[in-house]
Image 1 (cartoon, one colour):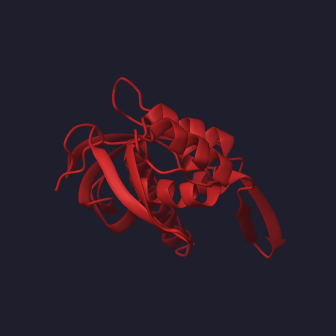
Image 2 (tube, rainbow, N blue to C red):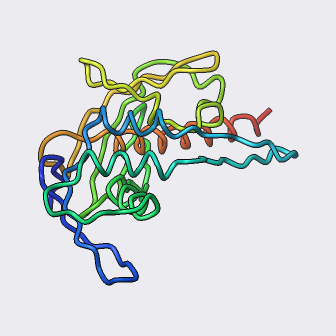
Length: 199
């Protein structure tokens, strides 16, 4: 079944009183970004290159998003339950990344099935190790009129062009695009590490 941001999603969550019936629409890109703004990420440096990310009060941002997307008759949720639901809606797990020339093909596992993306590294540099410096990628990923999400920070920037998406009925939501960009960033980092080893 193709992923469709316009459909109504029905699910259930366990509670001490039994299953709670949930009915929601899928969040818009603006709503996902609003959630990201409310979720302040704190990175603690533990030494020896180790870091730990924390998101205090992140559940409250998830509850606020749930209140925006819930449909008539959908159960009341607390902040913890809302977080479980939002995580489920935004699921976009990397299954595979393949490189051919300057294009990458990324396969994701999303809510309801698999999707395939072909993405081209249009221009830019990987200076600054963006993923390390900018941990909450969804806050910085913007969709331009050219449909090229741009990730910027540190001393350089990367712009990607989405060439092909399979497994969708309609638009590709920003959490999925972010997951694709993140997968490609990881592949780029690995290429740099392999290059470093040759010196």
